[in-house]
Amino acid sequence: MSTNSHRVPSARAGGTRRPASRPLTGSDRAKRRHRRLALLFLFPALLLLGALVVYPIGFSVVRSFFDASGDRFVGLGNYTEMLKDPATRGALKNNAIWVLVAPALVTGVGLILAVLTEKLKWAAAFKMLIFMPMAISFLAAGITFRLVYEQDPERGVLNAAIVTVHDAFDPASSYPGAHPREGRDLTKEKDGSFATAASTVPGKSVRLGLVGILPKDLPTDAKPAREAATRPDSLSGAVYLDFAPKGGGKPGVIDPGEKGLPGVTVELSRGGDVVGHTTTAADGSFQFSGVSDGQYSVRLPAANFAKPFNGVDWLGPSLITPVIMAAYLWIWAGFAMVLIGAGLAALPRDVMEAARVDGAGEWQIFRRITAPLLAPVLGVVFVTLVINVMKVFDLVYIIAPGPVQQNANVLALQMWLVSFGGGGNQGLGSALGVLLLLLVVPAMAFNIRRFRRSKP
Image 1 (tube, rainbow, N blue to C red):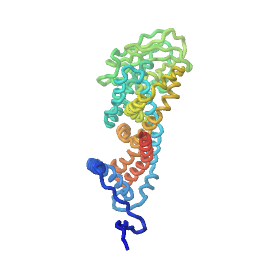
Image 2: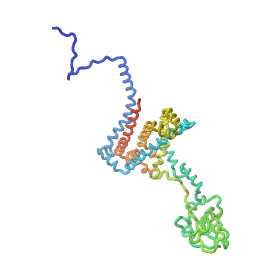
Image 3: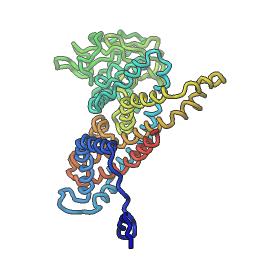
Image 4: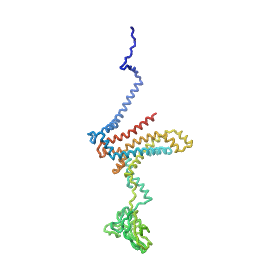
């Protein structure tokens, strides 16, 4: 019996045959060598990523299941406490406002700036100017805007401008807070004015002494107080600072050294109706001439003593979140403008030129051609800003004063406050961090998916 000279390949368990291995070629060896070399260079980055991102996330998740001391396992107790806390609910509400308003606002402004810069001769310089805030840290930007929003016009730039414009049309009073001495002849009315308690008649002189003014705050043209000369058909008097500089003066009497109050509006009323008005001279004297017989009352309107306009309370509870968003817009508008501008530069110009030839206006071109073609870029910018505003912390912490910080509170700030800002409960803070991560992850996944789709 003859036997075959070729050996039959042995079968493995299951009846399948092992495929014959292909010998490695030089190209395969080069690919493996390049792959090992790439992993070698990636290892430091992967090590840092694991140490600075993966490990802290894992530790925070584990820590969120323990109490403030970290010794007792509380399960979902921190998450339950977090959702019951009014401060956390307020932070969630403010985060929702940020997500709904800030990204759309910044993207819209960036789109407008990007379109307008295409028409500017010095577009590069303008873009650099708008993008410059991105080079400033959020800490420095927050301190800057905290000073800009200060209510005191002597410090707050914004209120200084507003007060200047306001006072140009409605000048401030020279004697804010001035008032008569208690128990004297002037009584305060409902609108803040002061009027003589007793009626007077022509030929009489009325002394209207006021206090509540520092001598150094008197107008520079103020002279020693003096009553105007009386006549039978006139009613005169003086408005003065009833305070002797060296003491010893008598209330209700014009003592030596007491100054008149110039520029005070004085009204003469009869039966509740104003029948005349005048302004005091440099020595505080005033006079109503041609006054008929009868009973009159002398009145000092409230406008003489109104407190000066100090601008808007930008850092108050009602405006704190919008003004912080304005600071955020100032910083990030340049980022949106540059990305959208890059998308504009890549648009096919022949389509726009064809539309212009067909008679389309610039608004029609923008609405029907530019905006639809820019939709992918606008989506990336918008989602990136959503991720960013979910984590906003620096501006809120620095700009919002302590008394109104809870009105502007956001999740990132609440996480810091309960962990390190006096709360001392890192278990609850870790739960807040996990919640913030869960809210950010969908937007990050959406952005990564868009990036993958845009690959050629």
